[in-house]
Image (cartoon, rainbow, N blue to C red; front, side, top):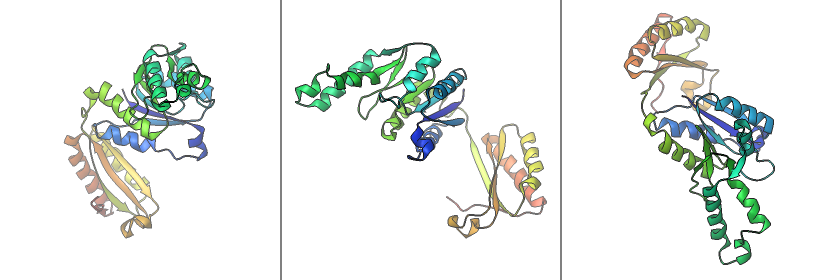
Length: 269
């Protein structure tokens, strides 16, 4: 079971808004000893969203989806989930009650705004129409809930709502998975070395240490990070099983030295 993230919305793909969910999802998973395995961006296209969900629902992964669960014409996620599952949308009774509470809270002493039969308020109840069998995700910001089906969890695109909902899902459903697979990471910098010269060494390290993966992050130079990073370099390292990382790191570092390159420790964070 891996963890995935689907970010839905034309505004992300067009650049009108900058995605903030990816970095936050990585953070929320990391502090719980978990990791994000994949992420996809999807525009506001019902066929494309439905096809994506049909595939991910069959994957067995835990999937968070942000965006498109409102009740305006460009919100399609609720309908696409129902289509992918082959079930109808139904007004969830708990969602209806939560939306009702929100309407009454915001209406104050205005009897017209508190009238649940007005066109505006009837439209608001559409936000509680979820695929049949869905479960509620509480929304601590304004009561309007998200929903879960299987191990897929759907929430609004607004970070102020989505991030607490994501935390609630993790802590409510997946706490038994926290910190089950300890991970460790170590790296160093190598200057003016072509990746092709280092590849056989990287492959040899992974072949010897089954619980470790080698990573190579090349850069043409970034003076904004400081003088050390201004030259062409590679951030080279290992990550994985803490019991194997130190030995794998030593093998990688020694191998780089034997190839005639000088490993340089990055500055302390």
